[in-house]
Length: 138
Image 1 (cartoon, rainbow, N blue to C red):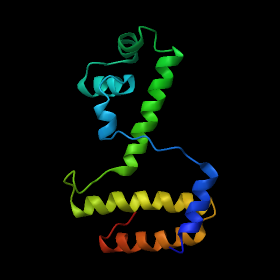
Image 2 (cartoon, rainbow, N blue to C red; image 1 turned 45 degrees about the horizontal axis):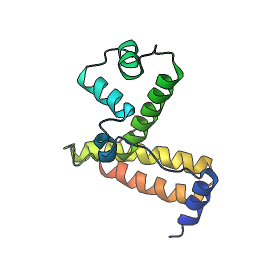
Image 3 (cartoon, one colour; image 1 turned 135 degrees about the horizontal axis):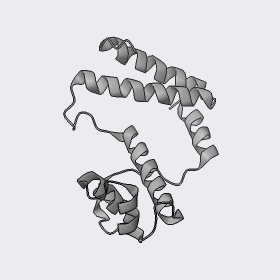
């Protein structure tokens, strides 16, 4: 609990409304254009921007509606990379540790840069123990 005030201070400065990810709720929105683009790329239906923009908006890929929606999807997918469940995906313990150590290292760097030194130090020590346990050299 002693690290929470630092983290809360950082979060209060940014006041993000929510983090959009490729989750179950997103996948359930089968008529949402963002999901349709995601699913079309995944299935191979959209091999390029021209076909996707034409199918979804009947416009060129440079149209603001398409490029904005594509950017929102990109952000959603990048956010999702920080919430992967490696155990459920069947990764080995070493693979899980590798992912966790690198994710925690990024969080430590961000927290230190934003002034949450105590919380960053705590997470850095935890990350070091994890890395040492599974002999990660990165």
